[in-house]
Length: 380
Image (cartoon, rainbow, N blue to C red):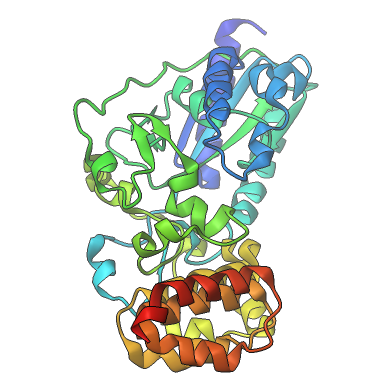
């Protein structure tokens, strides 16, 4: 096809993408060698923490021909999930858990995969015999550099993609093609001298502009980390039980954010009372979060986070609920309940822990108990 026909095809695909429900559309060349080199340097600093999957298939991230042979172009798509005005006053509601805005209702993977498949069918109609693959942050591709090259936005100092006049409350997804489509104009970086995101980070995870140490990031600690949350970050987590939006909340560009149109992203009105959450059994957890991104945490990971948040709430009246949790079958939950009781009751927590966990044998829980004893035994 000549360039004029291809330009018309791209415009058709753009219109169809917006009709289907995407909020941004652009085309990038399938070139990620330089971005792949930067990504490998980041991995070399161990900033990926326990996210071993990020280091897999590094060759594919640098050479997209290994993902789709003969790849020429990537259609990059943006999907708005801004469903509620949010500021930092959530920190004052200490007995209410805070959940990242994107996780308040349905798992975006389900919604976007259906949309991508519909658009992919249109691509096949408009570009017969082309080969394609769809992705929703699940494959070995560097989606943010591609999206920047496709003109959807620029990578901000917090490492999220930002769009002028739109902000950053959106998901990215892609369709890979072995057809050379006309490319969009790359987006210019408009962060300027602003460092709001860097300064607000509770754990100083943004170690330099555009560099995130995931091991310190609350989103990593409450979602990706599967084991115990390091002691040094538990106080900073506050009442966040799934993710952290702080760097997006303070970003000036998000003052332009518009409400999402997808009803599946909006909260169904559930309360996030920490006492209610800590009492969820396995069946209740599965039922409540069966279509939510939170389900991937499993109950053990989620209640680990809730226990930490209760330990940070400052109200000793919630201690009985944590004492009940000391009988939970999951050692990870018991261990964090021990820490939380220490925060709420001080040395008085030792009596409860000694009584409830006299026969404890799990190494993780025993480590927490020993830490508590070391901290408070002299004050007993």
